[in-house]
Image (cartoon, rainbow, N blue to C red; front, side):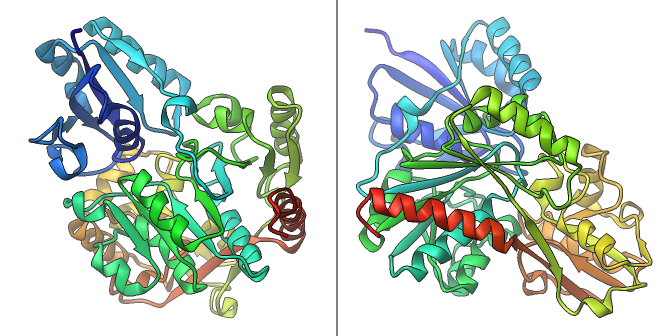
Length: 444
């Protein structure tokens, strides 16, 4: 039988997972290339032999996505797998048209071909869009389970941005030294540091079969802490999906966010304390229409500021979590909400001070006008973020990123941290859900 030639379109996440779980040892297919987008400097690398397996002794090349049609024709490709997340349906349709016109089939792989089954109960926390508040919910669940005396391991959606992919095959983060060992970017630190700060353990990497095997050795329960609006890599025993009323309607128009709503046991409409009532109701109506059996929880997202008295009547530069305000398409995040709440004198426009890749980021995402995304996918970009901040004419920096940004950059002005988490009422509702879950799995 002739092998079908395949290209996997991705962003250094689900693309690698789909390959590992379905294609790596499948003799019916030959993966001739990955294409990459979204993440800077991912293209022109190689998926190495240590990960690609015996059928690919030279590894698999990774090209820029712009070359997809050329690659289809050069390699006589039969099948293209679309394997990344948080894109509108119009974008998925456009890519399908490009691929089909070049002569190949266009495929979206679902749970049956990509989800792994754990020997331990799995709670999956996913979302409608990037920046809905998955991480704060995941960490709350982690604390609540640990407080009940259970051993918990959180497994994060992949972010293998270092050039050495084999070194990132299985990553375990429990100390700040672990962050340095794996050359973590700012985006990675934003997810891992909060777990470390509360004495937790979080796994990530490239090979999620091996990652799961390691996590199961030390855990009674696994939490899937999702990335963007991707669906879980593991078969969940309970699925919690976070929706955002600051982006009403997106629960029906973004891939694969709508899928996460449709398969959810629980949908948290987050940030109801800062969203418009009519937008909250729009999201609720949409969720009930496509998943009438889901339990809906109104989520409170509490925003606080360290030393808030320093902020009032000051001219501030607001820094936000990068993915939320870039491909998540939010014009602001927790930092901006905090600036309004604590009555700053002025939120300065960061664009005149942006240099290098930061200036390119503002050009790529023109909806950003009042916040600076904490971009830092490598040393050069981190340096350009630092220079942009130092050039800014302001009294202080209000940092809405989940990390202590002064650990990775040196700035010439005071930095005040914004923190955010679920409110007490939301935490209580989550605990009710967990108690029922634990009773079902004889862990209460």
